[in-house]
Image (cartoon, rainbow, N blue to C red):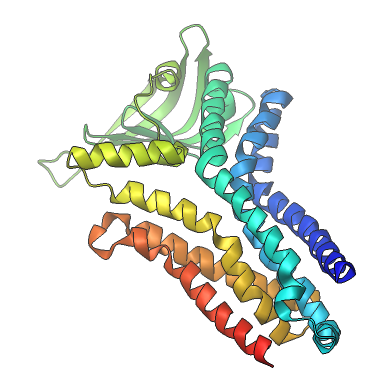
Amino acid sequence: MKTLNFYVTKSFLATFMMSIGVLTFGMLGARLIKVFEYMSKGVPFDVAMTFMLYVTPIALSYTIPWAALASIMLVFGRMSADNEITAMRACGISVLQIISPIIIFTFVLTLVCLFLNVELGPRYLGEADDLIKEVGVKQPMALLEPGRPIEFENNHIYIQERIGENELRDIQVFRMDEEAKQVEQDITAAKGKIEVDNQGQVLNVILYNATVVVYDKDSQNPRRTFSKQMTFVIDYGENFNKVKIGKRIKYLSFKEIFARIIMDKKLGIDTTRLEVELNQRLALALSPIAFLILGMPLAIRTSRRETSIGLFLSVLLAGLYTSAITICESLYSKPGLYPQFMLWAPNILYQIFGSVFLFRIARR
């Protein structure tokens, strides 16, 4: 029996390590490209790598359950296709005995995901945000990306192209009203440049031959004016150095969210958003158990040793699970639907269907 358990565990661990490496690299790929862009703009290598380390825990909280599911589908699908499971059961070994090492390992993975979701991931995600702000203060030009809106004092600047370090092409500025709901001015310019004042921590955006469209609330026809040169000042130092009086919800630890829920309830404030965040983290942390219960009997029933089939099924199951969680999370603005409890539906359904399939297989 020890030899059998060692064989199953060895196969699962080898596949799991390969899966988690590929999935984590894929999930961090977009951020890695962004890091390389920052480095090309002067951001130090150690700062860029520190940013990658900070976002890795939150990425692992998603890739660990997915890697466990893919490993279960691949390993047990191959064992079933090669009639290894049939041979084991013919020797009097039950299905639960066959998967017992994987159950223990999945429980350990669940504890790891729980720690990543409720404590480590949110904390270091906040550290990554702070690190970006530090880069913004020390290297403000690194954060001015073409196609990405720059917001300051209810104004939005869009830069289509940067030539060299300071020259700009095709700039558009939207000046919003005080409530940031309506555009008051639409300013476009074919050319411009940026001047950095490191001592004052400001960026001077200079536009040449700008066309200004003014939208008057009392008139349906906008007014158009022309300016040979105009300047906007972006006070990046003030924006990045503002004192934080509260963290964003996704940066809060489990204890902090729980404490805020208690405080808000005493003040009569709706806590649905906080409860949704709390339950989402717990549901995602417990997903390896749901994936094991459903994935293992499904892999045995499909009995396919082709890697493509196992990967397809794992992507399908993980995609359906993630989509359901995302949909439930988006309903936080509708407390009457109780989205904080709906978040548990994917886990419950996966476990119910998986238990039924597993019971049928065990009775054969």
